[in-house]
Image 1 (cartoon, rainbow, N blue to C red):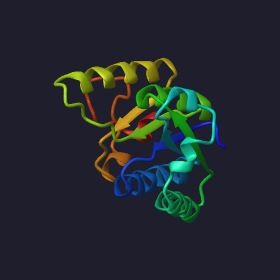
Image 2 (image 1 turned 90 degrees about the horizontal axis):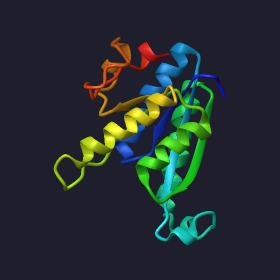
Image 3 (image 1 turned 135 degrees about the horizontal axis):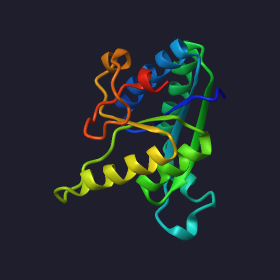
Length: 166
């Protein structure tokens, strides 16, 4: 894998396909790689590291992963697929960044029912990733944001430029 990697977190199918296409287009333009990370939620902490969480995966999940790999193959960029167990989604993102060596992570973050909680969690995640020299990209407006150059250190913008970081 390239030294500069854009990591895309598997979420809802349409969003993931769109994010993956944008990341692959960026990777082709900047001669970098793409890592697609699918998290498998673990219902019990004692299941971490076992094959029990994988037994609950649907065949549609497997088909989706295959389709994502075909998308990346079509762009001809270095691509790796990672399926990782997690008990805490946001902490898992930061751990996956370190595991794959990502410099940019694209994720569609869930909203909390508690007002302000999502914003606080995103703030903590963004700062944790900044310490790892990784840019958090959320809620992209594809593909326009790939061409937009902005300051990657600005913390108040929910839309970040990938090209400026690479």
